[in-house]
Amino acid sequence: MTKRNSVLVIGFALVLILAVAYGLAGEGFEIFKAKTDSGEESVAQTSEFSGWIKMMRSHASPRAGEDWEVTFMTQGKGDLEIIPQDQATIDHLSFVSLYCGEDEIEPEISKDGVILVKDWQCDEKLGALTHNVSVEHKHTLRFNFQAYYAFAYNSPETVTDSFTDRSKLASWLGLETDTAAGKVRLAPAPLRAFVTSETWAGDLGGLEGAAKLCQAAANSAGLGGEWVALLTGHISICNRMTQSAGNYVLLDGTLVADNWDMLKGGSIYNPITLTENLEVVSGSVWTGVGSQTSLCYMPPSGSDGRCKDWYYSGEDVTGLRGHAGWYLGYTTAYWLRATPDVACNSHLMLYCFEL
Image 1: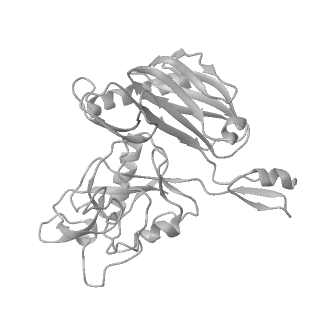
Image 2: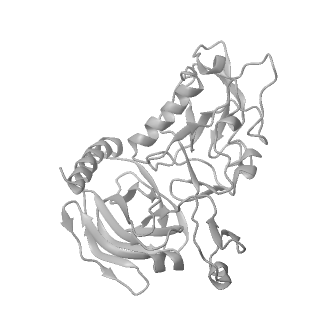
Image 3: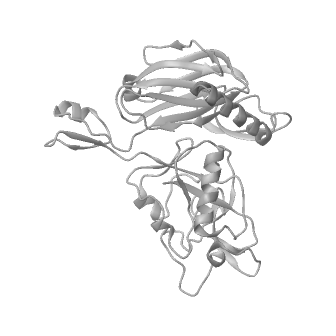
């Protein structure tokens, strides 16, 4: 089986899964970010949606000279526009191909690298866009389809080059430079986060079991990467997460926190309300964290609040929780710690962070 046929088989299987999840055969409910007539972005909700776009493989780290393939799915008919978000993306990417299933599409491409396909319709098939990458760097593409949008990006964690020209070094943004050694180092790639679409009682199989639930959710959505649950038990979550100097973002690129220092302080820009399936949800989340202002806070010795280290689902013990989304008039203040605590037989979501 060829590589493309393998991708098509996987894509068709994902379509079947989404057909059940989104109710494509009948009525469904979906929430997406949409563009209003005024150009502002808002949340659109429809009981019978006419279309959507969903990224299937949006992030990669290709080396210079390698191809970067972005896979995505759409429902409905409309103009598909793919827009480079910065000059580096324009300069470093060369269009290779665009497919809808097995059909190769010839798009219009502007001098600024904007790709346009009029009346795109690729229902129940996998779309695949391929560029060749000439320089390892952070690249971002925005996909506009009907009223909806999504992002794809690549950003290798580090890049070393033998530049010695100060003007070249100065032309790059977000780089750590060592001009004496003539080296360039990219800032760390963004780490992604989501909240699970499923809920569980307090018996999560311990911290390792919770991490496996996050990994399974990520795998089911084709996100790639390694994932861990933001969950404190007998050890703090701060000992299990990647403490990055780079950004933490939602799956659509929305900024959550500038870096680890901001995140561990309990302050975030936007609530973690986007699931692995890019659905917007709101509700309680198991955290085991006893503070609104410290991700690393451990409950006092002798107290539980962690459903017996996340191996217990009885109603006689309570677990510490946070809240994803709107709660008591705030969208982010209670994301780590909300009150009251809830019984361990309650079914709550999990926050999942990329390692």
